Amino acid sequence: MELRGYKVLKKIGHGGMATVYKGVQSSLNRPVAIKVLDRALVSHSEIHARFERESYIIAKLDHPNIIRVIDRGLTPEGQPYFVMDYIEGLDLKALIKKDSLKISQRIGIAIQLCKALSYAHENSIVHRDLKPANVLVDKSGSARMLDFGIAHFYEDEEERSAMETKAGDVMGTMAYMAPEQMQSADLVTAQSDIYSFGVVLYELLTGKLPLGRFQMPSVVNPKVPKSLDNVVDKCLAPDPAARPVSANVIKTRLLKILKGAHIAPAEKQRASETLKSAKNNFSLLDVIKDDKFGAVYLFEDKQKHELLVIKKRQSTNTGFIQSKLLSQLTHPNIVNVIGTSKNERVFIIVMEYLKGGCLQDRLIRPYPLTEFKEVALQISRAINFAHNNRILHGNLRPKNILFTEHSVAKIVDFGFDEHYGGERDNWYEVLGEERTGRIDIYAAGLVFFQMITGESGKPKAKNGELIESALFDEIPERLQAIIKKMTAANVEDRYQSFVPIIDEIEAVYIEKEEVVAPYEPVIRQPKKKSMMPVIITLIIVLGFLGTESYYLYTGKPNVVFDKISEMSDQAFDWMQGQYKGSNLWLF
Image (tube, rainbow, N blue to C red; front, side):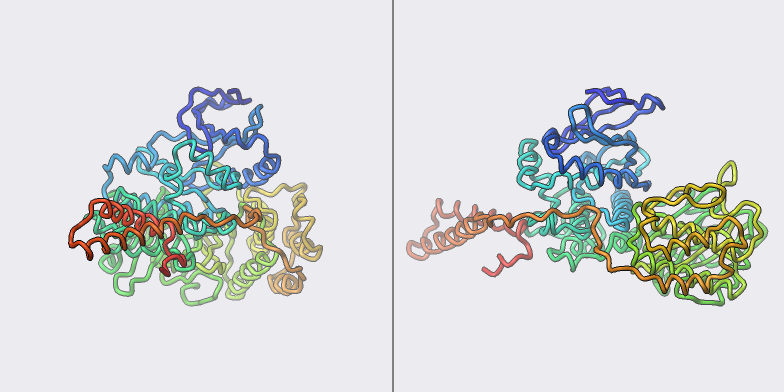
């Protein structure tokens, strides 16, 4: 096989949907993994169109626990392919088989998977095929998920099943599917991934699959904390509505159970030094960030059992005054500051913990305008409140806009300076401009532009003015005018405050939008119901009646009927695993 720009070295894997090759990217002389999707897709023009549309979204995924896709395209034969970073390590399937991981390491991997799922789900991307074989773990223990959304290119379930049967991988995939996913691909949601995660977590903890009337993980493996039983049980609920509402909720629960056992000793020591006077009142759960500029830690208050974020700033006090002021104020769209302290070397800020991630992680696709309007108003109201209290943000950007579990925006890091590496490149402000409230207006305008266009990178500009994009041109003209005025290069041409911005955004009329999922479901004709449940039910009933009747009339056991009874028990276990939660249990 030949691909332009790549040298294919050898085949390193093959499954029911794709073949993986190790290769070298010629331009950078770096190793890559090339996944070529099955030949069955070559004749499907609709799938080619979907690949062009949706693979672009998949390629924009940027998270430390997701394999990065660096290129995509079609082979000369018309087969879709993805080029990914090459990772030295083992897949989770092989690690589970080796059975060499400590319980803390297993939970640590599960937490990383939750982080990856949360990031994807916040961008309305569903994995659809989560299983141990789709998780790579490197030598340092970092887990990376792969194949996000690729299963969606195989929309015909019968065709996919046929391909998987040929590969001998039916059980390996079916065992991880949620009940609704077995019914129809149209029913797949983020909650389906939560179910698959539950299966993976069970197997990670026990080495077994949760088939039939399965035992809880702590029963199968006494080393597993009993508190994990409830997590697994909720993830495997047959009803999607009964499962945890998000991967973030699961992650938080796992962090509380693990109590920092996955954190390196050196990181624990640095965190302990941050809270010398109050460390007995707090328990370290996670290290969110730790570098030469400072650190961000997740702690649990041992008395109240509340989660808190403690941010440590090294060699700078910028933001201390603003944080001190905000600790005495509250606003629904500003992160609650619980307290601050400082000395000559560091300054500490204690804040509420938000589970919804940041705006930077939600810019993979354009915001629906109705959703954009609400978030834009929340941002504007927060900054307007701060300005009214003589607090300048000065560094507003998508990563400083956080979300609650229910997607309410909250602003953080008022007054903080930012570290850009070698050269300062803060394109959320006009270089050399006086630091007044209008720099926050300019930055907010750029953030709004990014939300509308779905571009996380630097917007293109000419002579300081934004170069409009096709998506920007499609929004209401009144909204275009607001954003253009907010981002005017000349400070005098901008709004003087957020008050008129709030009024004008509220006045923008937005037609009711049809919210389309990133992987638009294909409407299929209903399929004929399988007779398998009826047949197996008859086996179970006949096995039971035959055995009992023979024994009642003769007083002796019957070998044949005993065998039938054994088969019926096996069939019963199988059915419970496949049809758990359905109306079939009425018998």
